[in-house]
Length: 265
Length: 228
Image (cartoon, rainbow over all chains, first blue to last red; front, side):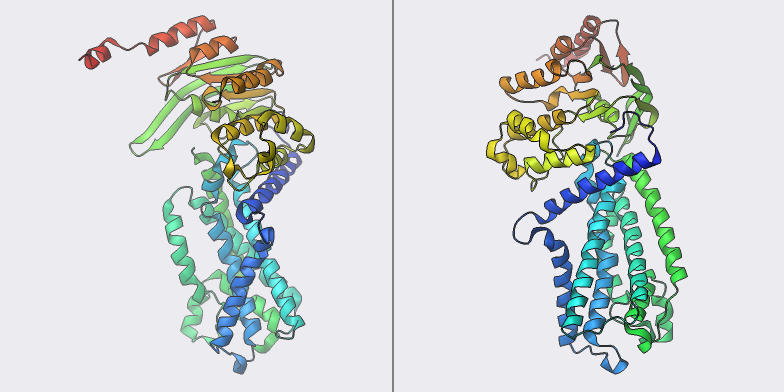
């Protein structure tokens, strides 16, 4: 630890890396403990969710086979996308409260607490997506993606959206319990509109315009376009999604800054 | 040098803003120490939190020209699932120190035995306090922030804390806050009093002590009120 409060950028970066590492190790043990699978639950939990939804959708015969998309791949890409934008926020809610005593260590900042939870959720959801799709491709239930780079681009956009939303709402909980109360119903209601269970092309024109206001829909469309190729005509505007994410990120960072000044013990 | 410059702290309450203190300034040189006396609710803990950096001042600034500790023996951050060792690893990671050479000291000081590797969930209050104090001693600082109320334990524990802090680390600076004037008299070379939102300085510990006792004395109208 440097003695003075004036630090160079790189010293600051080194401290932040140290703190994030410390928080992540702590969070993993706190959340998953050392019993049974322990830390593997970080990946196991989202996998079980995705498997369950895939099973349900298959059993319900929500077959889009006629439209050229196999249901397993449709469900895995769809539900994994939901995990990407939903889980980080759900875990950042209450994150400041649960960790505020750690702020007694001067180098631990509010943003570190939130970034830790965001990173863990993104790592968990990403690993779950990779493991499940590899497994299904291996046993022949899913095809390999048509264009891997496009899939990655869609995934990155969803991660950015999830992270910026989590930053914003996580910091907002420091000011008002309203953020906490409203998030769960909002997330629940957004799920059916998020593009996980449909392709925009299948919707009536009027409805298409409405759902395309939601940034994550663009990410899911891009992801599926990469996965399935041109089987379905995709609808996305990554410029629009990037604008939304930038806006959320800026608001999130501003709120985090205000939250770090107002945390009380 | 640690310098506190024109610091005020306002907390928002449901009845509007509440000013804990206003325009507080003082400095502390390396190797020196200061006692802060104050009655319950005078803002002693807030002062320690501000100096530690956990809470930001509403106005003014605090410059830390030396490594200032977190409030000593602060154990509020212990998570039930983590073991004593996990907590040691955590602070070591945060401060960029290798934890392995510190394990013997912490084990010896805390006298936790096998519990050192058990979740904090199973600790008694005393075990937690010992762990918290040992972790504070595991990381090296130039200036320690001590809230006397935090260090609660039996006579033996007090004696060992005393040895670690005031004997082994007698070259370090410290700030001791307490409502117990005797503690301040025993350990500090200078004392100030937090009184009604102001930090009052005195030429020596004895005059601070005398003033503090006076503020503690019940006012005549209070005596009148409580008379049967």
